[in-house]
Length: 114
Image (cartoon, rainbow, N blue to C red; front, side, top):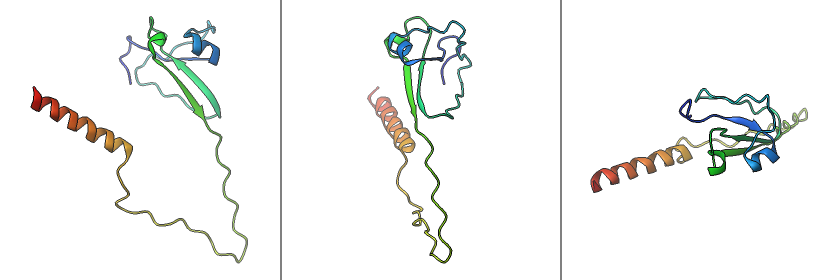
């Protein structure tokens, strides 16, 4: 998410990405601040912020979309079915929860030190 009017998202090609420009005059930047981009085909996708010098200051993103994995073949008749191992309810800590915890600890530290 970003503040509308302050930033935008423009899809470009690899060469334009490196130079922080758009050679496609008909390209229309996304400007809602809460844009959704479908990543349905494999390959590299390049996006830049087209506002002022934001791209040259690092506001750009390349995404590599991998091809979908082929489904597993069906088991032969009479062969035992493979079942995935059971998942643990405890499961571990997700990266998002770890990040949120780190931010909370840093905020508490800043409040204590202020």
